[in-house]
Image 1 (cartoon, rainbow, N blue to C red):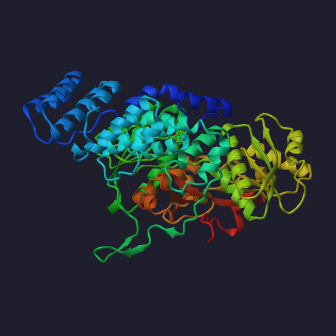
Image 2 (image 1 turned 45 degrees about the horizontal axis):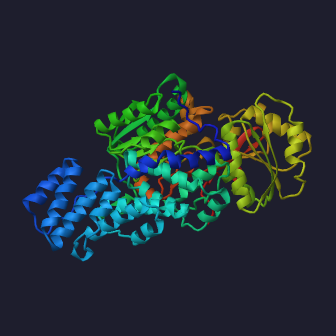
Length: 606
């Protein structure tokens, strides 16, 4: 199986929706089995040899004989003991899949005779029986209340049944929201089945309904990332709520012992770094690894952790095996893997040690609690270019991007952000990689743009193509300012060629253009390491930031107003474990990329 560090082409909207709907039937068996094992029962009112024998049969999985034994005991005792035995018989029959038999066992049960968690267990059984008979309303009535104080097994079963009841009752949104809560608590196959059901529920809603619903959710609602993922799959990404952090990490404050210590800093003692060392991704991995090591050796020797580097291989299975080796070797924190497929596969595993993944998974889900994901995303850049243009008073934009998948993602994110901020995209076009005459494409994209001060052009492409485009924009008398993603810059100064790009403003890693506190100077280290030069410079900066994040990661996850001034931009985290990068800005002048407006401050003004 071939791995790659970038997302594949998204499915067409109609096929995506059809695929999601089809998951409902395909995963029904998984849903019925999810949270299937009932919790340990409360002790019976009076333990007898008969009940002890029945419990032993139950624990061995002999549910038929256990049910018969409990029913026989119920016929010979009265009061609380009889109610307990009938409930246990029904639970045994439910375990073997006989809900009709469970219903018969509950016929004569006296609720007032139940104690402890038994009344809730009765409600759960009766709700499941009601669902099996198509009575969603009865099931929903039995599943009211939050029950936050419940034992985990009972709480999970309650939520799973509530999600099924809501879906059966026609409220797919409520079902999805409950399953989003479940996702943070499940593991293994139960988590997989729950995720498929969650996406299937969202897949029954159209894009307009999803957009309307997400507006009603608080920023940290567990369902938000899943709606975002569904809309991306439909080719309709949401505008991003760009963070506005105002609190730098590491401010020196008195600690518990009275000594000054950097706020939010928690040392990491052992690190496992997972990178693909195969030939296919060797240059990418080398730049990230060298950046990580540069930050590591620049750190104070007294707090430098033990570090081991592992080959993450070419497949998700190999990446998981590398993670397990790192854990076995005593890693306190694991950094990596890099490939999107491997990140997704690792996030599906029970994680004994928390992870800082170096990409975002193909599937779009958020990391498990305590872990985080960090990447250089074209989507994030497209959204921030849109914000930059709106801040400059630009309300009408033309979009011209190459026909690569990463550029398409940037363009979609730009449009969503620009329009959400009140702007209008008046024309769009895609440029084939090998084409050199862009006159028709320029006319298509800019024909309705006009020439006012409120106009601008957004582009996302590699330097060679951008030089051709910008020259032809000027020849076509398109005077609107041009804004670009970082892909326009090759990483090293090339004044002769880049004079064609004069005036173009673009987002990028601040470290490429100026000093960053605590990081080595780019010019000095690039003279020593090829991996810090050219296009590898961003990945080098990315590796440095991955190391710098580790001691502050827990603080950032708990304080969304905090940020780390990184080499790739100011880094902040949301409650879902996603690291957000606020980029710096540069502009071409006389063929040289320089800080825009004399600075590369990434953090927005307050």
